[in-house]
Image 1 (cartoon, rainbow, N blue to C red):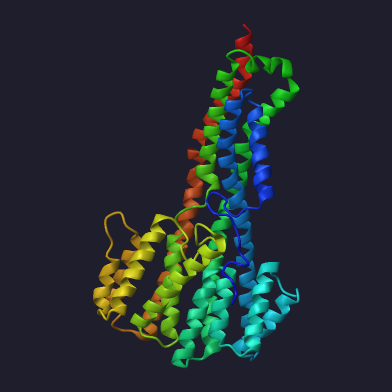
Image 2: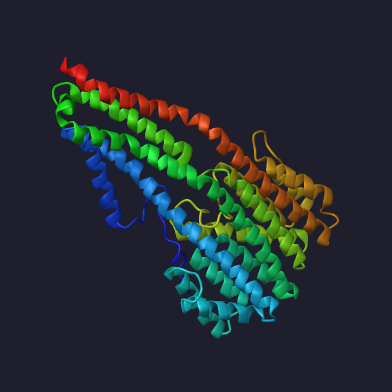
Amino acid sequence: MLREGTAVTGPSKWAYGLPPSVLAIAAAAALGITLLYFRHAVLVVGAAVLVYRMILPLVAMRGDNAGARRLRKDALLWFEELNMGLKAGKSLTTATMDLGIRIAGGQASADAGAAECWRHCTGLIRLHYPIGFVYRELARGLGLPELRSLAALIGSAVDTGANLPQVFMRSAEGLRGHLEGIEILEASLASRRMEGCLLAAAPAAYTAFLRLATPDYMAPLYAGTGWMVALVVFGLQLGGSWMFFRLMLREEAGRSALGLAAFQEEVALHMQAGLGLADAWQRAAHSRSEGGKASDGGKGGKGGNAGGGGNAGGGGSDEIDSRIALAAGQLAMGAPFGKALAALAQEKGGEASLGRLADLLQQNYQLGGGSLATLLMQEARETRQRRILSQQAKDAKKGTTLLFPMVLLLLSALVLTAAPAMLSI
């Protein structure tokens, strides 16, 4: 059995799981930065701890985002190659086997961990395991929620006797749209992250320049009461850098709309595979929950970043997951679907997309079949587009909010430049 998370191993919020060498380098950098300001051992240790706690999330997020982006890009290529094989007349098992052999042989895009996952799944195919089980194992190994959803859709197609290649191609198309939506959001944040890293590092670089270029001028900061001025400068710079981190470097909460769009698409695809609405809802809810667990297991912390479809997002995603699970639980106990929809009733200040989904289903679920599935697919696309436009609007407004940390950093530079002269008087 393939261990969960073998391919996507990344740090959590406070970087648990980072290699010891990275932790040592971060500690050395924190100690070196604080030595620019202080000479007293207590101040150096205390300030180094604060800087260390700021550096680790930056390193953690950089590695996490890089690994997740690579996996999503590889998944898009895998879906495309599998679709090409199916269109050429191959069965899904044969197309998956051929792709696994190419990846294991280094002929297709994948890192070492992903190649090992595909090698394991190729062995399962040779042992004649069901293709749905193979994709579940692949999802567990990679920690990619989209593959978990794909495995559930394949299982639905097998249970209902639907055309498996057609179901796979429709499913891959929807999942590709979801991954591309995440990539668009990541691209809009990439330049902001780089800008934030440079601006947050600028204060320490400026302090080091003054310390090395004008040691005699800066000497008053390291004698007498100069440490108090250095403490003020350090506090202003640390506060400004922390605000940059909060505004620009942290992962945007608010992918809940993307997760809900993926859920709607999965429900629609299950219905197109031949399931009724209630069964489709339960299977999509189960694979969403399992996808979040796979992402958590692969990442060791905050789930969903690997693929963005499971638990991606902050509080909004938790609300969506809990309400979807509540509705699925009521359906499992035999409650009518109309009553289960009450679990999606929007509270004041709740997730607006849930209310739209509940209204859509209440008005149309009696029709069933392809008509409702088409409406759900259309609503999912519109939800994803609204989320992307909302992110672009937020990016446009961030220029104003960035004035606050810039004022702190500018003030720290003025104090650092003028204080030695004032202390020498």
